Every structure is written in C-alpha cells, then in structure tokens.
Length: 94
Image 1 (cartoon, helix red, strand yellow):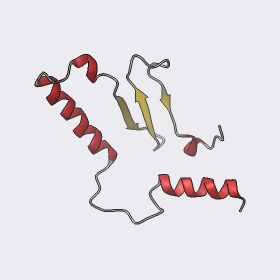
Image 2 (cartoon, helix red, strand yellow):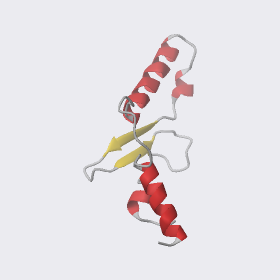
Image 3 (tube, rainbow, N blue to C red):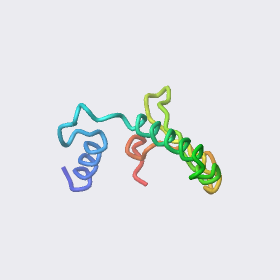
Image 4 (cartoon, one colour):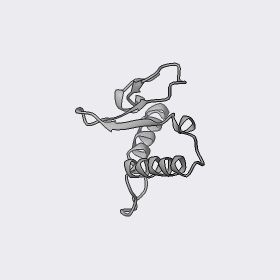
C-alpha cells in the first residue's frame, strides 16, 4: 500500500471513529447541535443575543442515500444554501 492510499485509509477510519474505542456515553452530533440551538434561543429570549447575530447556522441531515449532508443557512456565504457531501464519501480527490 503506498503512502497516499495509507493516508486515505487512516483518514477514513478516523472519520468513521474506528481508530480508537468509542465511548458509548457519547451523544451524536445532532444532539449537540440541538443543545446549541436551544442555548441560542435562550440567549435571544434573555436579550443577550440579537436574532440577527444568531443567524448562520447550518442544518445537517441524513438523506435517502444514507449520507449526511450540510445545508448552510448563512446569507453571507457566497454560495447560499450550498449542499455538499464529504469528499471522503464521494471518492473525489480534489
């Protein structure tokens, strides 16, 4: 196996969480994102954060092809509502 292939394999294993034993108590990222959104809503309600400053979230969702995608909702991004799939899962070498 050449160096480039080895690096790709290590990265793939790392992204999938298979390099080290996983903690069964860890919550999925979706739970953390939900907590972040709830905290932002609480800060807005308390007057510590303006609604305009709270924008810029992204939405991560599981599509029918069983891959996770991210949709950006930040209006300041040049590619508004950009949806992408990780290069690791598309097989692209870009």
